[in-house]
Image (cartoon, rainbow, N blue to C red; front, side, top):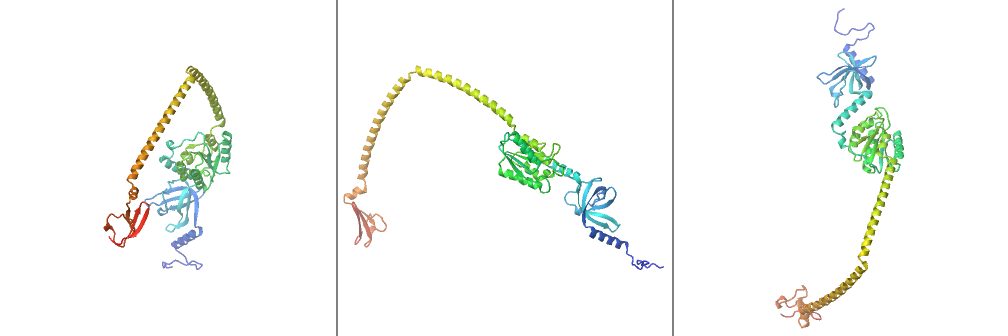
Length: 408
């Protein structure tokens, strides 16, 4: 039979398709049927060519699939994953038509499980440590006896019960303010930060405890948040971090002014023991009483000595001399005051007579008058200062005349 170059019909009369058509249809079915999905597996056969694309296989105990992470899909720094890493890959299933390879086109990739969380923790820890946020030199000292203690935690958790129990036992007179926040889940970092900002804004506490009870690494991740860590660093109130158990460490522990191994230990740290303070106060009171008695004895002896000196100096005679001198001074003062008033009165009369002699009123009494322009009030010195018809005002010793000029 001669080959015409066209696909041959099958025995049943069906038309054959090319390999390219088969792969194209298979690709369409895969992409439309499955869509985007997360796939977990172990990386193997990883390749990083110069193009920037990353090729590898994802496998589990019984199967594997090829994967491609194209450069244009990579956002930010690419994770430094390697063969053997367990990862989560988000992507869509497709088929490379040229070779007929079924593959996963990766859009996002991250480490799976606690391994990823530990890596994130270590990366952030290294970053903040390099910035100097863990340095002891920048950390604040706790108050010896706080007037009020703030606690940032879940109001329904075991941690707050432990803290309040210890504080009530050690120093029950110190009030406690609770700033409620979620300590686990997606909203926890934001709620913890909001509670911390509220405590800073209200400025009613001398020390803050931030923490929660124990849990898995994932449970404690809210305290590994970078923004929360920076808020703790910038807090003007001393902060004690009390997250989890003694073996648990979080970023909050490293940036806080003091790390307590447990919430109960934090309560032990922030307040002194009341009984110790009472013993110290009793000892101090005893010392004050002893010192007071000694002081009174010394003062009593000094008073006796001064009394004997007072008797020897005859206070009655001293009082008589003082009284006589006072009477003499009073008499001299009275005479000087009388003479001073008399002299002042005489000088005042002379000044009054001199003033009256030059007063314009005295001149008016001698028959003179002061003539003014009635409209402007200007004193007239010459006849030419007015014209016929002008109104004038003449001030005499006993009154004023208003007149009109008829002729000058």
